[in-house]
Image 1 (cartoon, rainbow, N blue to C red):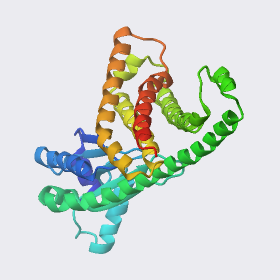
Image 2: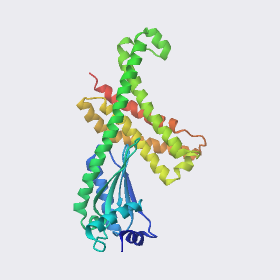
Image 3: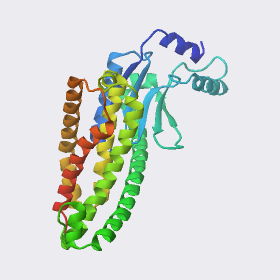
Image 4: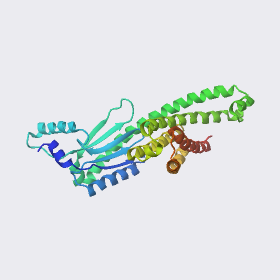
Length: 322
């Protein structure tokens, strides 16, 4: 029996066992635990013939762990031809290779797939295979973090330009002129800090509006907020948007400051900040659903959630200013 026939025999009329989680950009220990638990549950509750897919969502990409051919049968044809060229027409294995697929969410990025043993080896020798899988996933997660860092560096560079524009504008004004323009007084000694705040919030708003545009077009569409939230896939994607937006804002401030004590403080505060953000988003979603709001804009929803987050981080940053 060739491997395509085997796959059809094994997978026909079977639902796909799925699991997934959001991977923290900077917590290998927690990510390893989530990966271990998800695949251990698979091997304890399913048979090697069960179709499965584990999805890890990252800030700017996703990683999928699955059998070869689950989404593309042509890959099986290629693999079968390889096996026949090596082992001959009849003497080849029926084991299915295990695939780890890395899909960056950036323009012109290429999907990368790596084979890591077989599905059967994952079930029969879990402890050895999980570490091989983890090493490949760590490599892909580092590639994702490089993408995130590049995005943050672009935001930081833009922030420097924006700050200089603000400094040029407000430094030419008298304090009375600044008060007339802004509605509040900014003494000359505070212009630099004020312009830093304005440029930081400019970048935060850019991140938020980008997320809002995606959510409005890809998740909400012509539906009401309640209709969108009742769809499991779109609801899960919204959770990803929330976490992703948080991390883009968090790492903007983290990477734009080199103070090690500040880094330690932000790492200490990060879990509290993201939990509070999720709770705020959840409560706001509950209120919108209860009110059966018809007209909804993700730009407003995300702005109301993330501007306070950014202001909390800025307050922490200011504590470490020289």
